[in-house]
Image 1: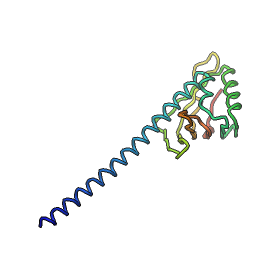
Image 2 (image 1 turned 45 degrees about the horizontal axis):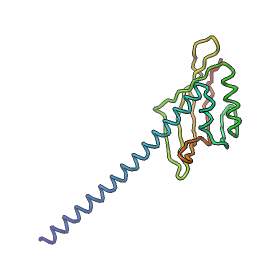
Image 3 (image 1 turned 135 degrees about the vertical axis):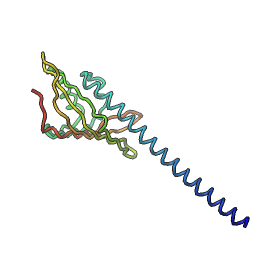
Image 4 (image 1 turned 90 degrees about the horizontal axis):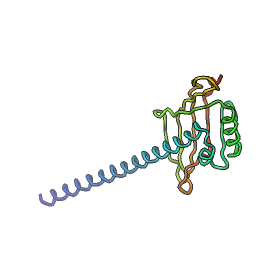
Amino acid sequence: MTNKFLRLLLLAVFFISAGYAQQSDMSKSNKAKSDLYNEIFQVDSTLFSAFNNCDSATYKKFFTDDLEFYHDIGGLSVGLAIEMQEFSEMCARGTHIRRELVKSTLEVYPIKNYGAIEIGVHRFSHTNKGQAEKPSGTYKFIQVWQKKDGQWKISRVISYGHDDMKNE
């Protein structure tokens, strides 16, 4: 009986420790996902603070040179130079555009050996000269973030759902 008891005890210890190891691995995985979510949320916030304030020097830091921007109404634009030209023109028009992330919609997924995918919904508002701010619309986006040398940069953007855009 003593051998049987010892075997049962060892078996119980084995299953408990295996379960703990699996739970520990899941905890590490959940922490990594949470850390990635927080990192992307932070860089998204900094990027769009620059966007909202027409801070072109900061805005530019968040894109790769080979940026591809797919917009359901505007089409495809390729390259950081085009994005910066469009950003400068938008800021020069004197119509202030403000972007706000709908945080409850934010999804972040890792891309092994590259970075992350950010998916979400954001609201835009605009202010024409001498007028109060008005809603422009709520739209969907996907951004592919590359992490290189410790820096997060967007390499691809898909922006869609602009059917109800209001900018007048």
